[in-house]
Image 1: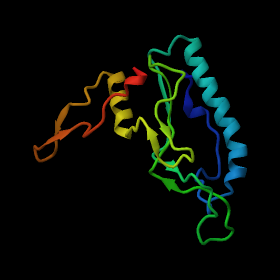
Image 2 (image 1 turned 180 degrees about the vertical axis):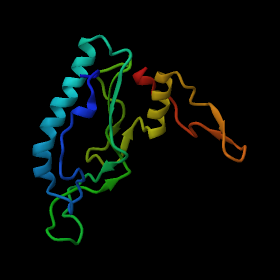
Image 3 (image 1 turned 45 degrees about the vertical axis):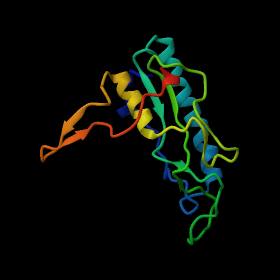
Image 4 (image 1 turned 90 degrees about the vertical axis):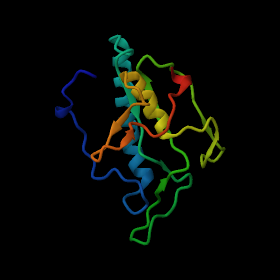
Length: 162
């Protein structure tokens, strides 16, 4: 699966957004999640069966979390249940890359609102990926005016994965 021509393989959905004004979140998840579950499982199993798990890294994430509580959307009609952007906490799935698997790093409070232990920053994940790629996250670059610019302004590799 990891070696396929992904340009020929696609699944189309009318929308991907789960705000309450985009579509009904529960109906959307009933159709999308089984497909996502099968696809990500097949990809990861294929990577491990082929012995590529040291060389291939899979990361499934978004750029933010979603509100812990389902809301009834914005002032549009119809008002369907949905979830808005939530910067307080998010989930990330990682597999392969020679990383340690089968455990959870970090935890939110009971309601999934905020980190409760082992608070991580997205730059920590980026630093970990850079390490996998052989890139020093402390590398300094120079911007268009000749000023030093850090490749990654903050973040440390996630030790529990390495």
